[in-house]
Image (cartoon, rainbow, N blue to C red; front, side):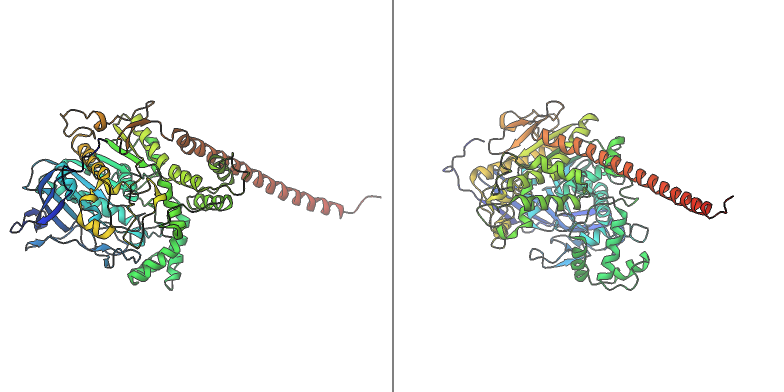
Length: 601
């Protein structure tokens, strides 16, 4: 990136409410009254622009617990849309002191005055399907609107046990959070023209579980008609934490939760659901995180998801829309960040010996349903540095990071990219290698900055959302990025909004010129495998982690199939052996009976 002359200007970013302006929009359900703010930044974006905000807009009725969302009823008077709505109920956290199950609301940020035929970007937040919210300044759409002249929508959806409780039958099929997202996308599609948006140019985008959600919407027949493009930031349907098809385990956990909550009948699904519907929300959330281990993957429910993502992609029955997709270089530092919290804020990473590394790999693989010993051995063979394996003092921190980066994020993305290209789709890939000078996880003094996170999970959020230019983020996170990083954030916002406008992150319009130099962006093709490197230099590269992704996407599935064949052969042998034992028992009894017969002299 070009050097920035710091003497030319003083970095000033302001957002002020424009008094006397109360923008009004009539949607299907009634009239909304929002507010107008003026965004001004005089060094990196060099813009002063009015933005209309409609906050806390209901896209569905207050949901019944463990039930699909229902359409919002109409209202007669003007509805105040100037404040964020409640955060969806989740485990208690200092980040969100006030939560509610009545949380199906969204926010709309639009250029002012009202535009016409403007591209739309709909954001799905991350948080492992268990935490997070759209009702926060982390996803404040004003900078994106100011930079890209797009409309930005951010949506809430139910989380954790309130999203995913399943008895594996009609009593509670689950996937309520995903159905909430479908309802939000449908609401946007039906109403966005009232805000000046183009319902035929809607890009959905998300990060982590939000990115996996984006990926699920390309698979589900319920939602694919409500958008035209997609941006994935660190997660797909093939991320091992995103989807699980184990109905027996789901039912067992549901019944265990019932016992934990003191339900008298945990065998009858309807009785269990009735009991848990009456439970205190905070107590239920706390108990569920204990039973489910804070893991709430999407499952087959017969409605939102009727077949496994693997089968859907094998049949080619997915929405092959243009996609922008990528991940960060050090995604895998997320695991030690949560497994070893004592090292949060440490200038050096935690020491990891071989015994610990092997144990945590086994635990993670088991959690993901990959508990075959042959798979475990293969993973260790791949990630242990055998040049150092004989040294008992060897450190396996980087092996752990690489394992998490590859298996959870990089290679699930690689699989999706290849399938879309093979189906004739347009794919743009990014690889973020810049390690921010201050982490997105540095929430003031609660989570001090942790340098060993590197270009870790979620670090792209700071740049995509223009957080350096949001005063409230400075107050909450204590972010103080460098001038070069502020300029990089502008580039991120331009790339993302360009893609929404043209389907090409280097072009600001369909008929515009493609970017050159640091603004160029190669199309991802096979065998070229090119990507944009998101760093201060904004270069390009190719075939990043290609060998590792062949291991995860081809070798491991073949190995699992082989292991299954062995299991089936063993089972067949055991059944044959049991049959033989039965026959031998019958023969021996017949022989003994024969011996008892009188003999001829």
